[in-house]
Image (cartoon, rainbow, N blue to C red):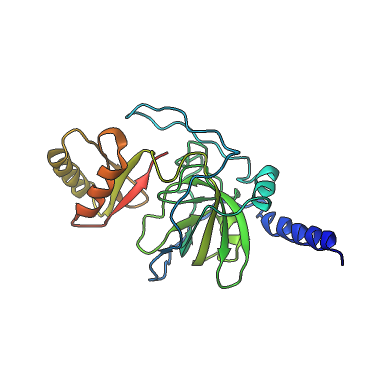
Length: 266
């Protein structure tokens, strides 16, 4: 086999791996079962995706614009981009899977959540990031995009849709994965709109009390409480959605229940 034939064979194999997707999937409940394995980062984030536009200027506060992803999560152009580029950031940790608690629920990027899309939730990668997730036990890999925020459970770094979890062989259940980031619509290491999400609380009254404490302790911050699936949460956005302030809050906050998670909104 010539060098050109070998290259074509490798290319065809990658396209086959990245094209795996579940079809006709319906919503269903789930139970998260993360293993007690702490995530580990393997490289510092670097912004190096010339095919994506630079981020537009933004106000310091206010709503978060929609960051759309292709229908189904991944496009043919995404696969071609992965084949011709190297990852700009990698990390390893536990992945779980999730589904929407009700039909029509919107993901954090502003689009309606779909069990059948090759998408995932991550707490801090820029919305719309193009990633390849590899099951470290079976070596199954699949391309997907970040369209949501989570997982808000300890010792897990990624939440997969049903289609994404099936494409790498961890549905139903969880598994240790490597996340390779190939492209980010916005820089990873500078800017961004940051907050801290705290919970879960077992009652609305506990969440409200913690919200009131944060309003007293962090004047100028925006604080809300909201309900999740059989749980209650509090979110604090520092003035200007500043990352350094959010990181300091995440380190200092010690809620009576739950955990304080550093989270990127955009």
